[in-house]
Length: 115
Length: 117
Image 1 (cartoon, rainbow over the protein chains, first blue to last red):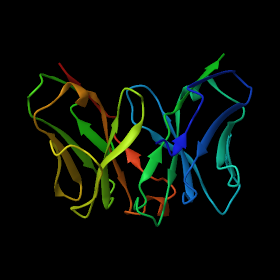
Image 2 (cartoon, each protein chain N blue to C red):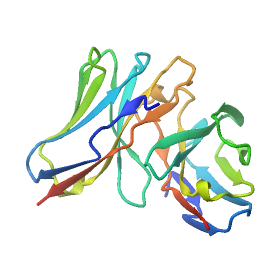
Image 3 (cartoon, each protein chain N blue to C red):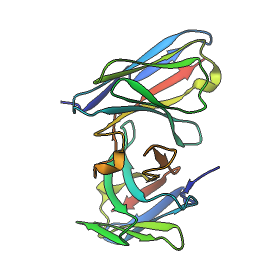
């Protein structure tokens, strides 16, 4: 039972173009969403987050959009750089529910940015 | 100066053995976690400890036991290893139990790749 879904296992983008990574969730109690970036042989590192009270959060080249009615969020990277090549995990949290603030992760999307 | 460190990075062992994975964080965080990334690439919570108390114990076999000698350490001990235990195990920490109160969520270690043969 996947509560957080990343349906695209991989994405290939040309350097300088926009990368759009998508994430869907099923639990309407989720109220905080995060994106993590993971390089091979390393642990995931925090990238950007968004609270359910917002629909957009921007940090430099990274922007996360949240559509609560569709239970969908996306991560935009503009412009994409070769160093952005990594696996991106979407994660969600139910802050006050039974999960005790535990993060639920998607399967990840492998982004390849080609020079 | 690594924030969350795990040892060993790689572990190859035979079925039936008992092994431990160590984790230490120097961030002063209150809560630590163990996650398992299986062959399907899902990152699934196994345990979390808040101030030395077990907070979450998901449906993990009791062959797995977390041990926390102090707030900065959360070790994972596995008894009677099975082939299906092969995975990458990640330790993580967060400032508080309510990870989302911090914008950074969790800080992860680099993972331990366990291979059971």
